[in-house]
Every structure is written in structure tokens, then in C-alpha cells.
Image (cartoon, rainbow, N blue to C red; front, side):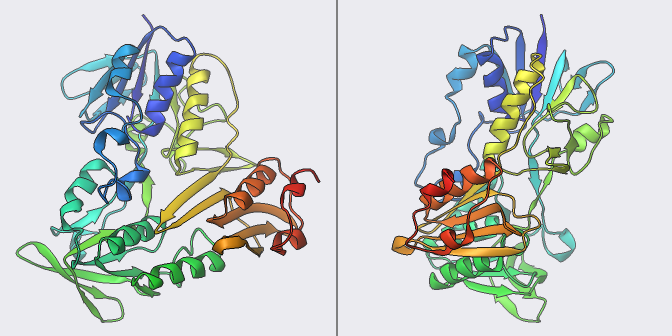
Length: 403
């Protein structure tokens, strides 16, 4: 019987195996995950789950019974040791699996602080998986003190949760401003004001020199300006890297992750990849998207193509972030923008529209779902929006969709 093996039991892996069954595949499916838990949502981990507002079972993407009901073999808590493309085998600690087709949905790994500067001290956390958050949850309590390293969305979301729990928060960002790599100065200004309004001490243009501990537990941070911060724990949010080491060791082509074509196929015709770990063609270049929507959509296209569809994956980038009572929604990619138009909506709604010349390429919308949806539809259609209409808070945006 034909056997499809999927390595990586996150959002992409779960979406891929479900899509295989939905498309009528009747062969064997094995889904391998390194964590000892069924596939679950990651975004709520550092927000609702850490705050105690969401239980474990609500994190599950599908009930555990779904996999048995659909004859999908789960191998959880298993690390894959090697892939042999020539023999078409996957080696685990206690067995070797043969595959007809293989999909890699291995996701990404958080960057950690070097041990040389104290990154191996107790009380230093990253927020990537369930074990990370479960380990950190007991120390996130009122009156505790934390240093958050990194002013991207991961760091800012962690800052918001900690501040809401009554933790004294200091956040350092080595770049000149928070969100510098991913957003315009206007968005940085918006979120800086939001966080400082909640008592977060944001220090930009300042890096971490080292962490110091007592009895193996972190106690203070020495910053690049010579100042020190007394801490009870540290959260590291300095980005993620694609989990492509298995693919690289197997001889697959690596280019900012596992290189796939427009169908999701790697340099080996029997191996596919999707999600955070995969880089793919996009509008004449090659990108890798770290988002739930991309993980789902790309994995589902890959599943159909594993069954012979030859469908082209057309990415529609969108993202979100929840901080305090603000929901940020992002559509498009702002790469190469040269001007930004601000729109002030009602009840504090704000959006920043990114243009390259007169072409709309992206939007950041804060508590403004209407602006977000209009901009998203325009961007996905390759259309633009008149800047005068966008900047006029009294103007109705809907006619832009008919223009």
C-alpha cells in the first residue's frame, strides 16, 4: 500500500494530512512529531494559554480521535534521526519507515542566547512550544521582574502578557526602534506608545551585554550602555530560523529554508515541504513566510500536488498580533515601500497603508477590520487605493473595491 510520511506535527503537518484524506487518499499516512502532544495552535500559547484563559484541549487543532478515525498514524514524541532519499526511508530511534512520498513540515526554531553571555541560566525562556510556555508560566506573576530581549512581535506580545499579569517589564531592542525589521516608523510609534502606556520600559538602540546569575539562576542583566536590570526571569524574542537541518543532511537544496518550487516540491521529486521551513517563489523572487495562514494554505496545496494535481501555490500574505486590547492585522508584504499613508478611523481605529510609488503593497491595521479587509482584497487583486481617499477619515473605503 502507498505510504505517505509527514515529518512535523504542527499547523502545516496537521493541515497536510487532513487534506490528503479530504482529497480521497486511501493509502497509509504517518505523521511524526517531536512533541508528545497532538498538533496544536501556537499563537495562543504566549497569550490566552499563558494567561490561563485557554485550556490545553482548546489548543488542539483537531480532537485526538480525528487521527484514529481517519486512519492517520501518529508518532508523537519521536525525533527523526535521518532521511535517506535514495532508499526512501526515515530513521527514528527505534524503527525505519519506508515512504513513497515524504513531506517536511518541520517549522522553525527560536534563536537562543549564547551560553557565553548567560543564555543557559535557569529562568531564561523562549516562547515557541507548549513545553516552553508551561515552564515559564509559574514565574509570570504579579510583582516579578522580567527583561524581554527583542522588540519584534514575539517580544512585544510577551511584554503585553507579562504587563497584564502585573510583572515589571523592561524590553531592550538593539535596533534604533522596535519593529524596525518588519514595520514602518508609524507602526513602531503606535506600539511604543501602547506599551509605555501600560508601564513597559522600552529601551531602543540598546542591546544585552550579558546575563548574570546566582546558583545557576538568572538574577540581573547588564546592558550595552552599562546599565543593569535586576530580573526574576528573561524572555528571549530575537526571531526564529527554519528547521531545515534534516533536509540539508539528506542533500536537499537549502535556500533560506528548504527550497521548493511553485508546487511545493523540493529538489527531490518524492519530497515536499510546506510552512515555516520552506522557501518558495513569489512574484519573481523567493520568500519564506512565518505565519499560520501560509502554513495551512501551502500545506494543503502540497497535499493535493502529492496526489498529482500540479497546482501552483499563490501566497496571499497576512498576519495578526494581539497586544492588550489591540488587534493588529497585516496584509501584504511591505518590502520596498517608499511612502506610508495614515488613516484614522473611529473609536481609535488606525491603519497605515504602505505604497511603492502609487501602488498599494501592504497595510497595518490596528482595531480597524474594515480598513484591513478592503486593503487585503485590493492587494491580493494587485490593485491600488487612492491615497486621498485613504487619508480622509470621512471617506468610505468600500467604493475602492469597485473602482
